[in-house]
Length: 233
Image 1 (tube, rainbow, N blue to C red):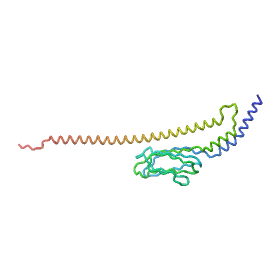
Image 2: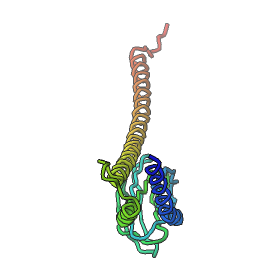
Image 3: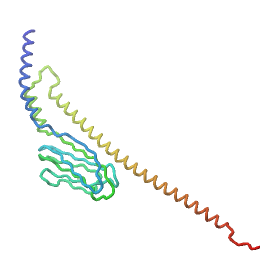
Image 4: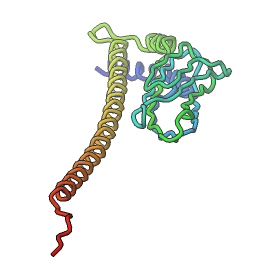
């Protein structure tokens, strides 16, 4: 029993010694890019640009929607870190664009509302980065080299890690889909509220016209029945 406990303690120390350089190497690695979303108000006749840093050899997905404002349209452009125009769209209400592989540097996203002189636009956009397959493979190989599963275990550490990563990816994708659905809901709600205001306005105008016509008809009928002849005695 004592020999077994000593053997386990020695195995634990060996694993700790092997894992320490791996953890220190992982800590020095640059953090992966984070997905982001943003909603902003674009004034009439203005152009606004955003810059997003990206690593090399990754996948960037940019999606935008105009969720408020007359016409629900805007001009959109996407430039690479070297200044190359990748996407240019005019008078669009939404769009989805993927850049793969990405370049190291800052990507430029611009939204232009200069064609509108009166109406401001409410714009929502989201940036999604996909993890590099090479990093996942290298991380998996490192774990396989350091930790060897025992024969008595039915579930391997690699399988658990893959399941956790898959679950994390699906949860992140679910959050992104829910965010897009909220953006669609906000756009539809703004459109319905705008239609309701227009219906109420023109309904009030029609009621005012009906009242005016009714008053004019009454005055006209009263004028027909008035006797304007002068009676001399």
